[in-house]
Length: 313
Image 1 (cartoon, helix red, strand yellow):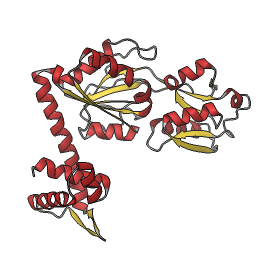
Image 2 (image 1 turned 180 degrees about the vertical axis):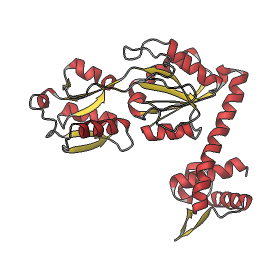
Image 3 (image 1 turned 30 degrees about the vertical axis):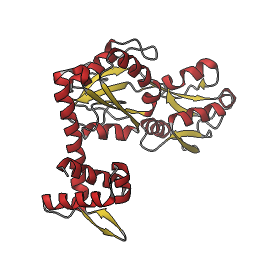
Image 4 (image 1 turned 90 degrees about the vertical axis):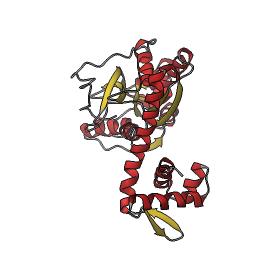
């Protein structure tokens, strides 16, 4: 078994929590996973796992090494993409990770037109929380990330493009008639969502502690608002059609609309195939009525090309 396969076994164990689950995800036997972990431990000279009941768990050194292993695997995949894309960008691979709202409302149309223009580029797409988006970019598990502003301390990245985005408070017309921010039930996204963080910060700024109902996904929150479960803070792009149809109305709220531009972010040195997708964003038709644009260097939407000093969303 190669070192890459051994590293993947360790990372998968860390993610799944058991040898059986790791074996199922990797489509190998449990004994193969155990053998890979034992071989890796002998190779680096420290115990990576230990017995816990009838199973195994990572040791302290194993947990630390798994974090590096994840980045090593991501960087290896990035290196392969760069090598193949350097020979022919049209035959390369792009790993895209995006936050939920962008994944539901921005990305599908962009990917459809990109595939039509570049049919031989292999695309891998993951839609996840804001926290995971930046973690995957930092660990080289993604080539391009689309989300809010990258968080402070995220080094070695470049903001390639930005797109205007606003967060607004919305509710069904029935609830809007008697809306009181401090008494209304606020529908919340899942933990790790940037929109949830922004909503909590907005309520704190108004010194309000209203009832909250966590519905999880972006779609569930919007559907809940339409059904009259409560009010919510949402991206205008995500509720545009509902507003136009009269199913939701925008509620004037202090501090809103919140301006939270979308950011397309890559590693400082992006692969050729990734740059094809970036250029497609910049040259493509307007998305939700707006165009992606290059960030202003040192400005409020972009930051410096080599890093970021803005909050995550």
